[in-house]
Image (cartoon, rainbow, N blue to C red; front, side, top):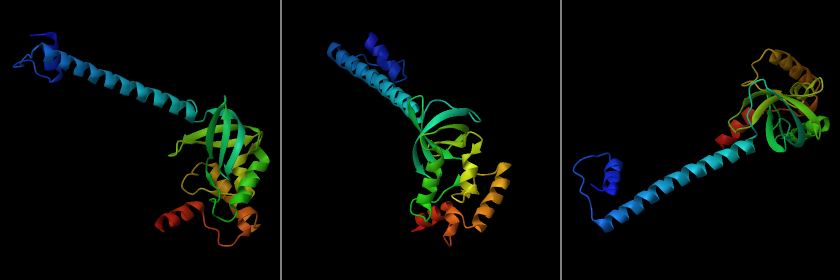
Amino acid sequence: MSVVCIRLASLRARTENVACPGPLTNKLIARGTHRYFRTRVLAIYVIFILGFFFSLEQGISWAKNETLYVSVSYIIDGDSIMVTKDEQELEIRLWGIDAPEYDQKGSESARSALSSIIMHSTIELEIVDRDKYNRLVAIARKGPLNINEYMVRSGHAWVHVYYCKAVECDAWYALERDARSRKMGIWKYKNQVPPWEWKAHKKKL
């Protein structure tokens, strides 16, 4: 049995009753087998390269409770920012809070409030998780100031009822109630709807 015939038998998971073709057919089979393996190797290589660059884009490895020092480059809204770390851009979601959506009242004032205290600043991030959009979720601090807490205390964000379950969340709820009673930030508008309810309602439309 020729080498090509043996390879063909192996590929088909059979070791007996394999008819060995002639020289010309052997050459065609060998060429097809080579093309098959070359395509497989190329596909694996492409997947590896894409995975490598995707991991670079999303920003290096991270661990829960790890601390990163980053520079704030852009404010997306009242609870999401873009930062730079080792010349890489990362999107950060502030943990435990939810600011108004772009089409809700108070959205721009929440964004401006966040920008006024951290834009172009170096801040500390305590990594909590990574969300379904592949963003790092973190508690942000500028010196002694807890930014997440500040957004609630100043009336520019809700405490997120689904994600804020830690011990400090009880204190944040008290700060939210105080800001609401003082009509600070978003609370100067009547009938404010929490962003998670706002988004759920829009999905039903």
